Length: 217
Image 1: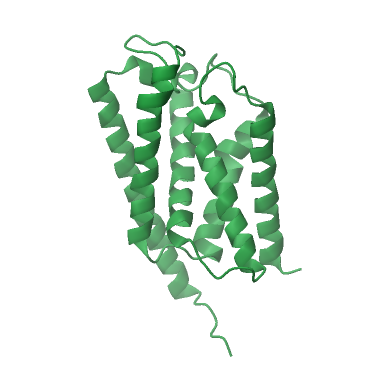
Image 2 (image 1 turned 120 degrees about the vertical axis):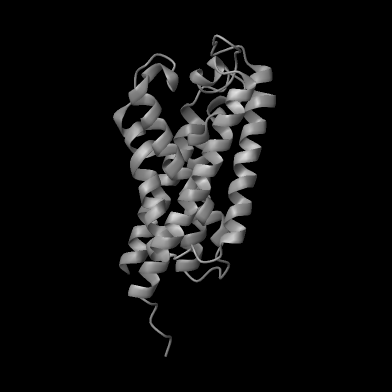
């Protein structure tokens, strides 16, 4: 088997396995939205879909590249990693219910290994970052939909976690912020996502220049 095919099988099976575990073992009764309240889980399922498309391309079952979605997924994955660990190390209670990490194999995959595997494919194998307009549309769209989901639906149907300002928002620290402060937080993270997209595009450009795809005979 080709090394790239093996790599993509590993990425696909890991993402698929964690998606199935999420659907089977997550609590859907305690809070409306269950695990889908969290951006981490959105990133996981986008990673699984991206991995399935990479497998389809690798096995010759599809020629559609999905560059915009793949780029967006890489950026969202990176944002999840940076945000989660930055907030956790500043205050564990800001992103967890009790200040404690979950099982190590969950934390390491969801907040490190899984995102890293998808980013490597996006930049170095699939070479997605060369048409950025679609990626920006996907990025703004997904972040916008997630913010509306969290603010209008998740908060509206849940009473916990509770904060000093409001309650029901998926991450505990958000419930301690006024709406204007949350808007600044969302906007700054969207801007961070655009910067990450440009950084990845730069890395991808350098890689393509240094290692061009061999011409098909």
